[in-house]
Length: 474
Image (tube, rainbow, N blue to C red; front, side):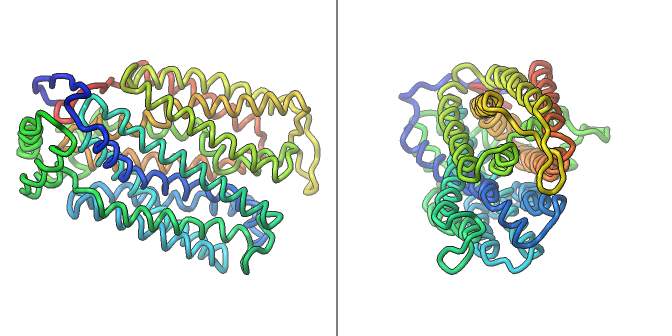
């Protein structure tokens, strides 16, 4: 790590808050597409299963297939952004979202649907890397956590809008598998993504390139203008620090993430990968990918299940606002610690409720838990409290840490590797849930509880605090 002198803490008089929020918000629109694209599948699962007559294993793969594209998109985005710039990568991601939305909505078979979902996943993966990197590079240190949390706010807002549009289209048609405006309703759920994809591509062209990229391309004048639009003081010092780190920089590759003289990754890279894996292995995306199917399986109607899913996404937005208010005050470590403890308690409660519920044979001869009125209420409360604890901690906290914890020399490549690990973990959890649910929901949620407990121990022992430090000091 760099041993440079720590920068003096900034005050509100040292930066232009409105401009900083503007740049970060446009960059974070990629997070909105990220949230929308990954959550829109929620309302389509039952209809896709019926229309294409697929089994549980293939259904799980259709749901999670986009995540394979996410792995590749995340891995390539950092290196591509160093070559062509952050803005061009944003525009490319928007184009991928657009093509995927139209193709998925008009899919003829389950196989081309998978192909279109993988294509959209490339855009999701690229957006998941480029937004936190860009935001970190244009942000003053004292508000970097709050601006970085806008990425998570955009993600959860995208999830909310996707689920709300799913609910609207399903209720308008009388069900996701029913005809609507010349197509079936589930197809319109995918096509609805065209609007935010176009908005992201257009708005990305209205913001300036990252100052670090500009300095790397010897465009110091424009880099000063970009930083000067956000910072009132210290622009020259920031440019000097960027140039200093670039002077010792070479084009980073995966080899640069390995310890000198050894075959093992740098400890900080392992920490980033572990943060990504833990964020997914607590099962948060089971709530947003499968919740409508999950609640229906334990006795809720389709409309009530979709309503509950929308409520969970609203809660996620509210607690993300709480996280934005707290992350630069109490720090990243403390926030993650509180979240892990709360997730362990709520997931453990869900595991107990599902494991002890009465088992009833469904129409296919499979035993499923049926919750009593009191158990149903308890499960809803526990599930939504789980969303609260995740949304105010591990949701935004991990993305903030990944955007700032790596030094300048390896940031793009290390962030790409960590994000790729996150999408692989997401793929594993999303693909395995239908099979795990067949074993028993108590088993599935017991698995997620175990990783919530492990995440608490991991944060206490390994995760560094980055609050208030300049990127050049990492």
